[in-house]
Image (cartoon, rainbow, N blue to C red; front, side):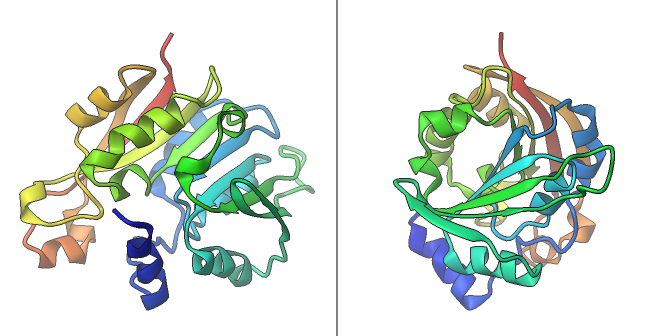
Length: 231
């Protein structure tokens, strides 16, 4: 899938994948993971996700990666944030301190979005990430890109990383992606070499997804996984 596909979607406003609320699996299951204050958490293909704000409010340092400059601009503009900008070999970095610094339970958080290609992240950057929240990345990639993506990202995260992965399971023949079907069998095969993917949640969400209903999809489940490095 070419980068222009996603750039065009943002230019045309065809961003039905953007959620206007915090992801329910994030709110429900992230508290079961343990992170030190200031831990870096990767949010791949982040768009303008509100999940980044939620994570930063908990004293975490969020690292989003997004291809579209429009998505990055909209994220900061819509929340009244004025990021610092710098450039590196990885792309353009937009960063801002954000979080509940007046809350004794959490220190101030931080959000950094790299406007660039997720495959350009280097080993040092990935190794510094103790956590990952992947709601929209794996399911956005066609089958031939999923294995290289998982190997590049998850194979190089911190040795003790933890995270959450959200995928969709539906009859792929009934609708073209994205988002694509990534069922449990494929998840286990993709992550087996370096990570444990524990299925912790499965829910029928077809009634909540008009796009899938209109396409005639007969079944749609949301799946959530707790991820950790395989020992």
